[in-house]
Amino acid sequence: MALLPSWTPNLHPLVVHFPIAVLTAAVVADLIDIFMPCPTKTGTISTWLYTIGASLAVLAYFSGDAAARSVSFSLDAIPVLQAHSDWAFRATWSFLFFSWAPHCRVSRGSSSGTSGGGAAPA
Image 1 (tube, one colour):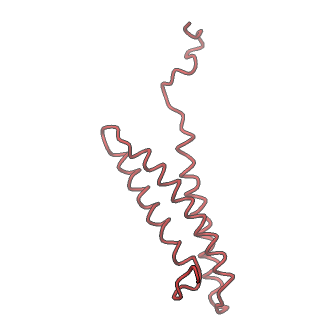
Image 2 (cartoon, rainbow, N blue to C red; image 1 turned 30 degrees about the vertical axis):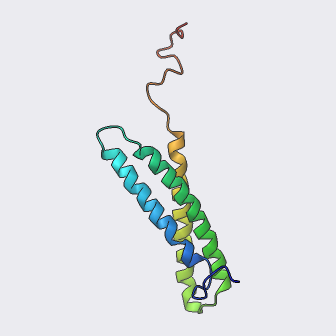
């Protein structure tokens, strides 16, 4: 029994749409978090969506790479395929950065250090 339907030549056409949808939802959640006047959980939701979407983008990138090696195409298609691969690589790394960046935020006003060079309160 084959794992893929007979109408698809490889996994890439099935996988590639999930990161697009999840990362679009992450951007929407991020915009809601930016423009909402009161604190909500959309910042946490967008971070999770970026992380899941970036992971799916990595899967889509590697499935596309495998697909390019498994199907035959004309020589005229090589520049288009290379451009597609280059943009997929850039997009994947960009969204990996966006999924990682929220974990590196430094909160302002934290009480974990001294301010003004004075001694820490006892």
